[in-house]
Image 1 (tube, helix red, strand yellow):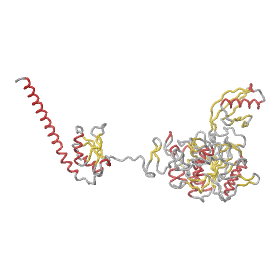
Image 2 (tube, each protein chain N blue to C red):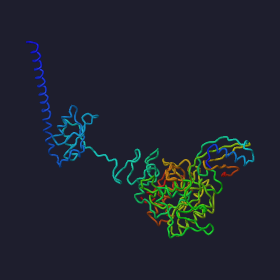
Image 3 (tube, each protein chain N blue to C red):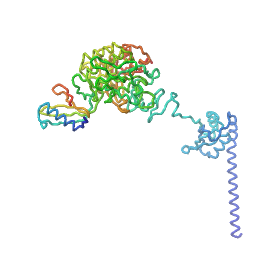
Image 4 (cartoon, chains in turn cyan, purple):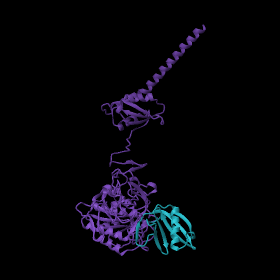
Amino acid sequence: MGFTKDSAAAAAKRDLARRLNVEESEVDVSSTSDSDFPDMSLGAAEKGEMSGQMISSGWTINLKAGGKSYEYRASRDQLRAKDFQGKNYKIG
Amino acid sequence: MNRSNFWVRIMIVAIVVTFAAVLGQIQRWRTSLRPVIQETSQLDKKPRRPKRPRQESEPEVLVRFKPGMTVDEIRAIAARTNDRVEDEIESVEGLIAIDDLDNADPTAVSESYAAMSDYVVYAEPNFEIRLDPQPNEGFTKDLVYRERPIGAPNDPQFAEQWALNNLGQDGGKDRADIDALKAWLTTQGSQKVVVAVLDSGVDYTHKDLVSNIWLRPENLPQYTDDELGTFDDTRGFDADATIGDPMDDNGHGTHCAGVIGAEGDNNEGIAGINWKVQIMPLKFLGRGGFGSTKNAIEAINYTIDRKKKGVNVRIISASWGSTSRSKALEDAIRAAGDAGILFVAAAGNSSTDNDKRPHYPSNYNLPNVISVAALDRTDSLASFSNYGAKTVHIAAPGKDIISTWLNDDYRSASGTSMATPHVAGVAALMLSKSPNMSVEKLRERLLSSVDKIDTLNGRTVSAGRLNAAKALGK
């Protein structure tokens, strides 16, 4: 995939808009920050997924839509929705 | 008296006075040297050996003469006993390097000069300082200021492997390591031992791993699964049957493999805990470093099959996990234990108590499972490491661990992923010494031979740090 911080944030916006069935313009990026995650699933493994237990660098992307906050996690090679309605999702 | 006669007489007087002064000085010299000459005659009694050519001699004695002694006087002293002034050390008044051309014992020569107490402040032999002794005879300079201890491998990045030999480098704590040097006095590993690295694959072409990669024996047929078909397992297993090549496309598995068995003492990169071993790559984690429980089970199934068909694979190193529990995975790991395979698993990196919030597969309460927490170079539990008084068994170095990476590279990484292969590697060392040791005994010895660390009390079962030497009985 080859994400950058900005392209990951844009992809997160698109994904959240799709999940919430709203326009992208209704989703705001609150913050994007460099982060170290506890594993290679960026601490957001899907159910039944196993991942390497190596500290992995990436970005935490905080979004806001309809008054609620949502968290995405990304690295150069992946994008994940963390705890979206109680579940983690790997995007793409 | 005319003017010209006056000046002639003045010149004659000047010449006479000058001549008298010179004569007086010579007399003084002779007077001062007389007792020295008498003393130096004693030096004739020093043991004599055949004279060496001048250019072959080394300054053997450093002598500091008293203030006021000139170099000429000192040369005269030295010449009387067939010594010569090698060099005047200008920064220290009176300090002279003297070369004994008779090749006499430096200690005896220095004592003879020291006896000239009227002229000498002190005298000492010119001690040899060896910076680069022969291997296994002392210390060898390595990198900036650290010295390579006896028995250390010649791998150029060994000094950065604090986990194996912690000298306090980079803010570390002296001796907070697994005592690898002492362990290697007993064994450096064996290619009769096979360690399966269940991970993202291994870069089996890495120059520091290539000699330690398992190859399927020619007399062992390819692996066949009734449902999945035949796998080309020349160098291990890839759970993705469509690819069938356990080449690492992430790096994580290669890093873990290097900790266990990067070739040691090959003047390349790092040294694994086992300088010689066979690493069996088992790939189930994909390029992103994550994979399915089902594929992990397939890889364990493969390992058990190979074990039953004669491959001496005794250890699975599993630097992965999640909070998802799988009964099927637990059953597969149990079956591996029944087949005599130790399963070493990472405890996880969420800084949580695994007694309360389980992490799998490390939390499976099976007799062949060892759960591993991570330590940093100061012997503290790494800030990210999970722990558990009942469910995390042992701690090992897991922060800032340098090891092999893709494409002949090396990289530092952190995680209980890195701690896990340290335990797997020591287990392999133990098997190289005691090939028939049972899984139960392996596990018991590893946990009972730790170095106790106070801060691990109540945080791990063994309350200590992995110690390779003690695990081998040293």
